[in-house]
Image 1 (cartoon, rainbow, N blue to C red):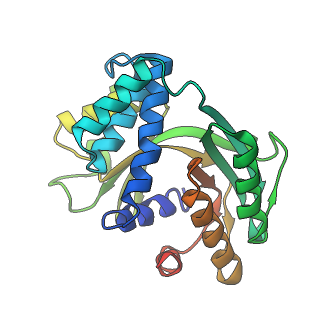
Image 2: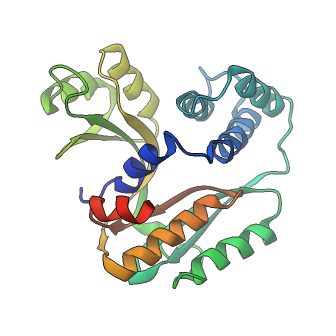
Length: 251
């Protein structure tokens, strides 16, 4: 699974001491509010809300902030926010999917188009690249983080909870599952004392496009610019880039 989540792994490292934490919190609060509005304020009965709360805790968001966002959503606030997905291509023919949450779709479209076109890409029509991605849950387990962690142990623990695949990489193991089984599988691992270093719902491409050099530089700048936009929640791509080069480009 070449380049499965290199961007996510590097980004998580960077965010650990990132001065943009307030921007990260703003995006998570939006997600909590909308999730609570759509599915109710009980995380036990609302998997999307539970995922958003987990993300909030992982980013060290205060409990009061989390509860206020849940209360707002449960009370019907955040109704002016709508979810949009934009698709396009970056340098080197890399496909890009941008998930947004906005109260002004004209502003968001303009901002997303500018961020893509300014760095050598172009916005595509709806459905132009999304067919080549599939929404999945992914959990990353670092080697050495737990005693006795192995592919067999991960499979044995997660088999009855919908585990689909385990891939070994140089620094750890990647577990893949369906969106529906994501939370149950994550809980099963935690209960067994196998804690993932990172876990997320992501878009996995059917095929990857290798990039390096100038194309890689432009692409990393594009994705970073998109993620900096207030209305953008997530950015996915099918780039395959050397992890060392990626870390250097992300600074």
